[in-house]
Structure formats: structure tokens, C-alpha cells
Length: 507
Length: 127
Image 1 (cartoon, each protein chain N blue to C red):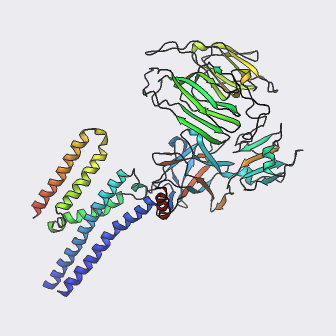
Image 2: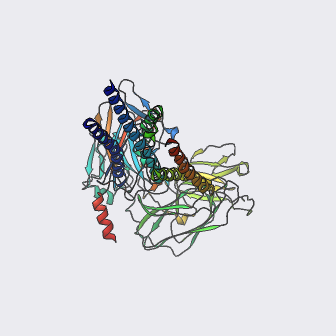
Image 3: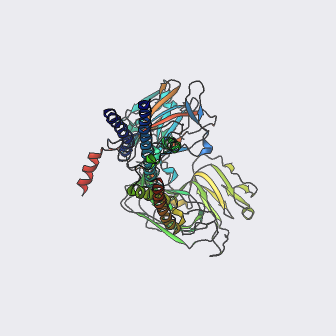
């Protein structure tokens, strides 16, 4: 009898432990969900273990995870950039601290960015690896700002003015010197002398297709643009009017208008719609308006009160819409554009748009057989505005700057020669200035390199509860030598008591 | 000899009782976590692999089937348990069939009644 009781007690004891296991799992999961301590850790190690990381995307830009048979280490190679990954987060966090274990012997620069807004160009990048910075030779000096966030490098091989402080350089950058910039916009604080707002209303009546970027200048005036547009519905999916306004690298305005309700590829053109961009009380300076539009959206007219409207990077013109409702076609709209640049890339679309284009009185034949871009150089280097005439329109032009009217021109780069991120630091540069934030030199770890990188995540863009990140490798030469071994993240927020206290305080 | 046999039977019963507990616990844990995973947008599977719960569930089920003493399987199957299983089961179906429109309600109700009454019959059979 006693023995039986003993056994029953043992059974009860074991049952208690069995019940305890799921309770402990649930408590552990509750801690993950509510993040009681304010810290949530996870890692991505390419072995299909549960993780808040989603896989590196798109699949075509990464190899399948591989395993080193000698060491048993798993890793993944990057084929081309940009590569994206995201984190499934149960709540908002204030900071994300990443530790990357990687190897990239031939790639001088690797950046990791966090998505700040809807559009794909809104990633805020930080440096994971920068060989140029780490292996700078003795002919360069480094000067840091007070907060150790910006570094100015000066080339001692050249006879340049020597700047003692970073702020002194930013306030008064040298003219006509080769300056390399790294995540910094030197033109952000530059002002146009003797600028006065215009009283005139300026119209741009050349229809434009897809994404465009506009530089303008504001001083004691409202940023005021009206875009008249319509949706072609040539391609399937939402066609939203997405507009973002930047001052330097800072996003000051973002808007995403609704689709016309027709997201099918049925060629039913929409009614004309208007988007009024009005932002009062902006500080004086240069602003960049990014129109991140799909190719289905045609801006048929831009009306503005701004004195200067300069298009950057790309112009894609189309004709006027001839028919409405069931079908449409485009009439020919001759295009007259001006540019201070000497090198262009251009093409036209379709046999009806075969034409002779005049660039600074030099004739170029655009054939519809030519589906790739044609390079053209005028050979001029004096930055004077030259005229481009396309009698039939319907062209794509690539160059740094365009204007539709000479009076609308100003130099948005203020004569500062900016360089691309992937340009090697060679002696041809006079100065290099860049935001380094909390950049640390990667540390050797066995056969790999480790580095840490942190992002403020409180105002980051989330989609379906996912924080989005990108890995950028400027000038990636596609020889498969960027290898990620693992990514660890520590997400930080206030502990639960502080969060509850804050909520009570709000009410 | 009789004592040894009694001890053996007792150990066997105790073990089956424990296995039964493992079965019930892992079944309820799996169903609950599966349901929460649907509710919380795959949050649970970001941290644990739910399939791991199927191992104790499957193994204990097989052992219980091969030792078909209904006392163990149905020991804790009262009305409340049946109701619990039926509600969770129909909830899961409701979320999985969310694209079926009005039919999802029909399907959910059907699953609820099927689960509830089939487990009742199961109990009756065993008694």
C-alpha cells in the first residue's frame, strides 16, 4: 500500500514536470512577445532555425546557403547587390544593434541600411566595412568633428587650403576642387546669394512618364507644385502617386496617393487627377522632390510658383494623350531641354519616334531598333547650358541635370564635385568628407571579420510588422566574394515597467 | 511471481499514465500555439519550430494506440475538454479558410459540431 502511494506520488511528480514544460515555453514566448526586459535577441545563421530574420532577398542575388565541410560553418554568398532582409518584430523598438560576421576580401565598401519610408530609395545606410577609410595612406590627414560623426580627409600631396575643423570646411567648402563625399550633402547648407522668390507661375507642359527628381530652391516662400497626371493602366498593380521631399538627406515630406481603383493591365486610362504639393514655412535652401512613380503614371502638366525647377538624373518624355476612355494614343510633342552637362545617354521608343536629335547643334539619329542607350558627348567642359531638341519627343535622356526653361536653372550642386560611394580614394582627390557615425574597423575573428552597426528604429518604416534592411556593396564586381556567415541582432526598447509607466502618463 | 507481475502491471500503468499526460499536454500545447501563431502573424514560429511538438505527440499516440487501454486515452476527456478541442479546432479552420467568404462560417460550424460530437461518441465507445 505504501509502495503504491509512493509510486503515485512519483507519477504525480513526473506529471507536474510534464505540465511545467509547456507552461515554461509559454512564459518564454510571452517574454519574447512583450519583451519584459526591453531586449530581444535573434540571429540568422542559415540553418532553418526559427528566427525573426527573413531570408536574404531576392533569391536571384544570393546563392543558396553553403557549408564548409572542414569547419562545419554555414554561410551565404551574395551574387549582386542590393540584397534585402527584414525582421519580424512583435512591437516597436528604439534601437537595433547588429553584429555581422562576414568576409569580403575584394570589396572595399559594404553598407547596411534601414528603410525609412515607403519608397525604395529611402534606405539610411551606415558603413559596415570601408577599406578606403581603414587603409588610408600617409599622405592623407584625418580631422574629426566634435561628435566623432564626420571625418574630413585632406590630401597632403596637393597644394590645398588646410582646414583645421570639419565645420570650417562644411561652411566654406573650396570651389573647383575634387571633393569626395560619403553620406554627406555639402550643399545642404549652401545658400544662393541675392535670391528672390518669383511672382510668376511657371508651367512645364511636356508630358513626363514614370519616376523623376526635381531640385528647387526655397527662401521665404511656400513650396508649391501642382501635378496633373493620369494612369495608363498598362501594367498590373497599384499605380500610386508617391512623392517625397528631402532637404539634404533628411526626408521632410512624404505622401502616397491612392490608385485610381483599376489595378489591372487593361489599358483603361484614368481621368486626369491633380496632386497639390504645398509645404509652407520651410527653411531656406535646396530641396529635392522625388517623384517615385510607376511607368503607368504620366504627368501631363506641372505648375509651380517656384523660381527654379531643375530635373535630375533622368527625363522620360511622352506625347499628349489623344483619346480618352476606351483607348488612347499619343500625339507628338516636340521636346526642348537645356542641360549644363556634356555627356548624355539617350534612346527613343517605337518606330514612330525615329528622329534626328540635335544636341548643341550636333545631330544624333535615334532609331527604334536601338533598344539600349546611346552615349553622346558634346566635348564641352564649360558648364554652359546647351540646347537639346527632339522634334518627335518620346525620348529617355540621362544626365545629371536638365531644365525645360533657361530661367528655371540653378546649379543644385553649387559647383561642388561630388563623387560616387564606390570611387577609390586616390590621389586625384583633394578632400574627402563623410559621415562615419559610429563606424568601427571590422575585427578579425577566426577566418572572418566581425563588425557592429546600430540603427535608430523608432521612426523606421515597417510593413506587415517587418523592419526592412538592405545590404549595399557599391561597385560590386560580381565575383562572389562577399560572404555572410551570420547576422545577430539585439533589439532594444524600454523595459515593460517603463513602457507601462509611460502609457499611464499619457492617459 | 504474483508480486512481480503486479509490480510490472503497476509500472506499466504508471508509464502509460505519464505517456497519456505527454500526449494530452503536447496536443493542447500544439493546438494552442498553432492558434496563437495564426493570431499573431507567425510570431510563434519565429522562435520555436512547432513541428518539434509533433514528435512527443506522435510517439505518445503510437504507444497509446498499441497499448489500447481506453482508460488512459479517455481519462481526461470530459465535456469541457471536448468543448475546448472543438473551439480550438474550429478557430484554426476559421482562420485557414478566411478566403472562402460566407462558406468559412459554414465550414467552421461544421468542424465544431463534428469535433464535439465525434469525441462524445469516442468517450461512449470507450466506457
